[in-house]
Image (cartoon, rainbow over all chains, first blue to last red; front, top):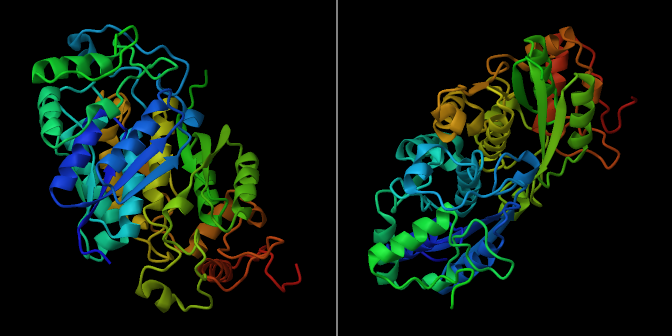
Length: 234
Length: 234
């Protein structure tokens, strides 16, 4: 058996979670990549997550099918239009319709279950409190409350064997800093996928909140943007 | 639209959650019953949950398919033997193999998601800290930590519109008291199902922790036990 410390890394196949995974590897963790198929429009991200896990040397990649569509309430799972062309001020003004109710809580709960089975002490999640889209479950106070709950929820936590830590290495980084960090760690961002509303061929729309933040990040980082946009020439 | 206050009630089709649902109805809530199909051995409980929701006048009954089997780690989802004939002292000595890692956390997370969509403020869970089987996620300190996290996780919580409450009306009741309460509220316990290892015909084994606690509860409550046991004459 390996003596390496184990970490679950929540992976969406996007820019943030891929960088978080590269950081976990750099810190010496054996990485268990966890992705969810939740009836999201952007099923492209499932393929991206698998390629990233392989490229970054994850020990295992698990895709969990969950049915958030049964619960509804989001533009990412329901037939609600994804907003386009919004300014950052507009993005931060209110919690957008792309918010999936309690999504990170559900994702972290599965990660906690898997962590307990694997006897992994750390769960990495690429949330960001700077260049984010106003989701409540991306804030440090939420993450701290989840971690506290997690250590009361589990056998390993209660028996004092393993303290569960929710690690958020990106939480105070700008999108540009995340891109620079990922680039330095060898993440191939052309594999990653961020768009909320891609074309059938998987090209990014370039106009949703996620595309706009990503574009701006590459520009500010001074790193060429490898994303294939609709109507773009690559 | 109804002006009634709404509650999600986690229902397993068992004795505890059915009594919790009856208590929610008595308190005047419009009840949304939430059940999980998680590859558990005891799929009988799914039918029981549906019958109970109907009998107790739930407004809606939602069954969410989740794949805890992919994660593993429990006698309830894996091919590990369910322990039989244990004394209560043995049950309380350690967390048993029937413990499903982070199960209540996953269940409550889905309930939280649905609560946010329905704008329901209350989530009922029939956990019990007295006649329980040593699960860490049945303790009051765990429930409090979940509630605190829930109010930081959600749009409604953050915007201060609705404070989410996790209600545990059974937490300090003995099994006998739960049976007496349910009986007084008209719960038909013959519809409920508790056994971890029922026969193919759905008869209770009578020997697993859950059966033993249930039998003792009926005896102490002075209420006839309507359960169909393997080898029994009803």
